[in-house]
Length: 169
Image (cartoon, rainbow, N blue to C red; front, side):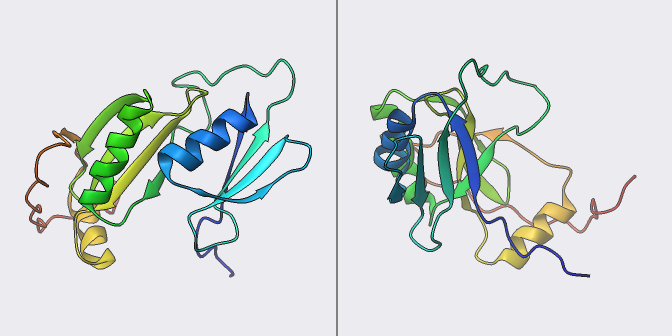
Protein backbone atom coordinates (compact mmCIF):
# COMPACT_ATOMS: atom_id res chain seq x y z
CA UNK A 1 0.00 0.00 0.00
CA UNK A 2 1.26 3.48 -0.83
CA UNK A 3 1.50 5.73 2.23
CA UNK A 4 2.05 9.50 2.57
CA UNK A 5 5.71 10.46 3.06
CA UNK A 6 5.29 13.92 4.56
CA UNK A 7 2.87 16.78 4.98
CA UNK A 8 3.14 18.79 1.79
CA UNK A 9 1.52 22.12 2.56
CA UNK A 10 -1.09 23.90 4.62
CA UNK A 11 -3.81 26.13 3.17
CA UNK A 12 -5.48 28.72 5.40
CA UNK A 13 -8.59 30.72 4.63
CA UNK A 14 -7.85 34.22 5.93
CA UNK A 15 -9.83 37.43 6.13
CA UNK A 16 -7.11 39.61 4.59
CA UNK A 17 -4.57 37.90 2.30
CA UNK A 18 -2.19 40.89 2.19
CA UNK A 19 -2.18 41.28 5.99
CA UNK A 20 -1.63 37.55 6.57
CA UNK A 21 1.06 37.41 3.89
CA UNK A 22 2.93 40.25 5.58
CA UNK A 23 2.62 38.50 8.97
CA UNK A 24 3.87 35.12 7.76
CA UNK A 25 6.61 36.75 5.64
CA UNK A 26 7.86 39.52 7.95
CA UNK A 27 7.18 38.05 11.40
CA UNK A 28 7.23 34.26 11.05
CA UNK A 29 9.92 34.24 8.34
CA UNK A 30 8.39 32.61 5.27
CA UNK A 31 9.36 33.68 1.75
CA UNK A 32 6.73 34.47 -0.87
CA UNK A 33 6.80 31.94 -3.71
CA UNK A 34 3.94 33.51 -5.67
CA UNK A 35 1.61 36.48 -5.35
CA UNK A 36 -1.69 35.85 -7.14
CA UNK A 37 -2.49 38.70 -9.55
CA UNK A 38 -6.04 38.99 -8.17
CA UNK A 39 -4.77 39.30 -4.55
CA UNK A 40 -7.01 36.46 -3.39
CA UNK A 41 -4.34 33.85 -2.71
CA UNK A 42 -0.61 33.81 -2.07
CA UNK A 43 1.83 30.95 -1.71
CA UNK A 44 4.74 30.96 0.74
CA UNK A 45 7.73 28.72 1.25
CA UNK A 46 10.26 27.86 3.94
CA UNK A 47 12.81 27.83 1.09
CA UNK A 48 12.97 24.10 0.39
CA UNK A 49 9.66 23.18 -1.29
CA UNK A 50 7.76 25.16 -3.92
CA UNK A 51 5.23 26.09 -1.23
CA UNK A 52 4.58 25.12 2.38
CA UNK A 53 1.76 27.55 3.14
CA UNK A 54 -1.00 28.99 1.01
CA UNK A 55 -3.23 31.86 2.11
CA UNK A 56 -6.64 32.03 0.43
CA UNK A 57 -9.21 34.78 0.81
CA UNK A 58 -12.05 33.41 2.94
CA UNK A 59 -15.48 33.48 1.31
CA UNK A 60 -17.82 36.34 2.23
CA UNK A 61 -19.48 35.76 5.59
CA UNK A 62 -16.90 33.21 6.73
CA UNK A 63 -16.90 32.81 10.49
CA UNK A 64 -13.66 33.08 12.47
CA UNK A 65 -12.24 29.90 13.93
CA UNK A 66 -13.46 29.17 17.44
CA UNK A 67 -11.12 27.59 19.98
CA UNK A 68 -12.08 23.97 20.55
CA UNK A 69 -14.08 23.53 17.36
CA UNK A 70 -13.84 20.35 15.31
CA UNK A 71 -11.04 20.55 12.78
CA UNK A 72 -7.51 21.87 12.86
CA UNK A 73 -6.26 22.68 16.36
CA UNK A 74 -2.94 24.18 15.28
CA UNK A 75 -0.10 23.64 12.85
CA UNK A 76 3.61 23.64 13.69
CA UNK A 77 6.59 24.98 11.76
CA UNK A 78 10.09 23.79 12.63
CA UNK A 79 13.01 26.17 13.12
CA UNK A 80 16.68 25.17 13.16
CA UNK A 81 17.50 25.46 16.86
CA UNK A 82 16.67 27.09 20.18
CA UNK A 83 18.36 30.38 19.27
CA UNK A 84 16.21 30.58 16.12
CA UNK A 85 13.14 29.90 18.26
CA UNK A 86 14.13 32.70 20.64
CA UNK A 87 14.59 35.08 17.68
CA UNK A 88 11.20 34.09 16.26
CA UNK A 89 9.61 34.74 19.66
CA UNK A 90 11.22 38.21 19.72
CA UNK A 91 9.77 38.96 16.25
CA UNK A 92 6.31 37.81 17.38
CA UNK A 93 6.49 40.05 20.46
CA UNK A 94 7.71 43.02 18.39
CA UNK A 95 4.76 42.52 16.01
CA UNK A 96 2.30 42.42 18.94
CA UNK A 97 1.30 38.85 18.08
CA UNK A 98 -0.64 37.03 20.76
CA UNK A 99 1.59 34.44 22.43
CA UNK A 100 -0.63 31.66 23.77
CA UNK A 101 2.03 29.63 25.58
CA UNK A 102 5.70 28.60 25.50
CA UNK A 103 6.50 25.04 26.57
CA UNK A 104 8.98 22.20 26.72
CA UNK A 105 7.38 19.03 25.31
CA UNK A 106 10.53 17.01 25.98
CA UNK A 107 11.23 16.23 22.34
CA UNK A 108 10.54 19.83 21.26
CA UNK A 109 10.58 23.36 22.65
CA UNK A 110 7.57 25.28 21.38
CA UNK A 111 6.08 28.75 21.05
CA UNK A 112 2.32 28.78 20.37
CA UNK A 113 0.87 31.98 18.93
CA UNK A 114 -2.16 33.35 17.10
CA UNK A 115 -1.96 34.65 13.56
CA UNK A 116 -3.89 37.80 12.51
CA UNK A 117 -7.12 35.76 12.15
CA UNK A 118 -6.70 34.07 15.53
CA UNK A 119 -5.51 30.76 14.05
CA UNK A 120 -3.26 28.89 16.48
CA UNK A 121 0.21 28.17 15.14
CA UNK A 122 3.36 26.75 16.70
CA UNK A 123 7.03 27.33 16.06
CA UNK A 124 9.27 24.63 17.50
CA UNK A 125 12.79 23.29 17.58
CA UNK A 126 13.85 19.74 18.30
CA UNK A 127 15.36 18.98 21.70
CA UNK A 128 17.26 15.91 20.54
CA UNK A 129 20.04 15.63 17.97
CA UNK A 130 18.30 12.94 15.91
CA UNK A 131 14.75 12.16 14.86
CA UNK A 132 15.19 8.64 16.27
CA UNK A 133 15.86 10.07 19.74
CA UNK A 134 12.87 12.40 19.50
CA UNK A 135 10.61 9.53 18.45
CA UNK A 136 11.99 7.33 21.24
CA UNK A 137 11.15 10.05 23.78
CA UNK A 138 7.67 10.47 22.30
CA UNK A 139 6.97 6.75 22.54
CA UNK A 140 8.34 6.49 26.09
CA UNK A 141 6.38 9.29 27.76
CA UNK A 142 2.70 10.14 28.35
CA UNK A 143 3.29 13.70 27.12
CA UNK A 144 4.25 16.95 28.78
CA UNK A 145 3.91 20.68 28.29
CA UNK A 146 6.11 22.28 30.92
CA UNK A 147 6.08 26.10 30.72
CA UNK A 148 9.49 27.63 30.00
CA UNK A 149 11.04 31.08 29.95
CA UNK A 150 12.01 31.46 26.28
CA UNK A 151 14.47 34.23 27.18
CA UNK A 152 16.49 31.82 29.36
CA UNK A 153 19.08 29.33 28.12
CA UNK A 154 17.65 26.13 26.64
CA UNK A 155 16.41 23.61 29.21
CA UNK A 156 18.51 20.50 29.73
CA UNK A 157 17.78 17.65 27.35
CA UNK A 158 15.36 15.17 28.90
CA UNK A 159 16.31 11.57 29.54
CA UNK A 160 14.50 8.93 27.51
CA UNK A 161 12.62 6.62 29.93
CA UNK A 162 12.40 2.88 29.36
CA UNK A 163 8.58 2.82 29.15
CA UNK A 164 6.25 2.37 26.19
CA UNK A 165 3.29 4.63 25.47
CA UNK A 166 3.12 3.65 21.79
CA UNK A 167 0.35 1.10 22.41
CA UNK A 168 -3.18 1.71 23.68
CA UNK A 169 -3.72 1.05 27.37
